[in-house]
Image (cartoon, rainbow, N blue to C red):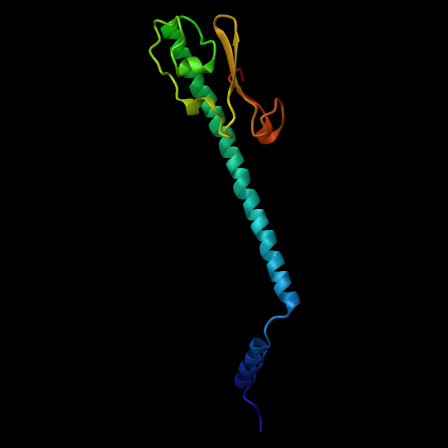
Length: 146
């Protein structure tokens, strides 16, 4: 008597499922999932760094406009970025606040650097993700002078 091939395959499949997976097979699957999760996390977090760097660059440009408004109102640039938030003594034409406290920190939560160069010159800078001068990729500086 000949066995039905469909019945034979179903029996083989059922037997394989009852036996379960070996420990090696489970470890291989877990390792593959970990590798894939690592690659996805790298893409997601790398994307966050790019977004933070671009937002900080935009923030520096926006703050430049706020300093120009301060300069128009007061006849000179502020001595510090805090002058955009609180009226400095002697600034009788101050029409601020020109900025919010949060505007003075980059997207990594570090204070923006401000240097005054003469009566009308200034530079606003963020030192990027690592907070140190120089660097490459998302650690490179962002400056209003660029």
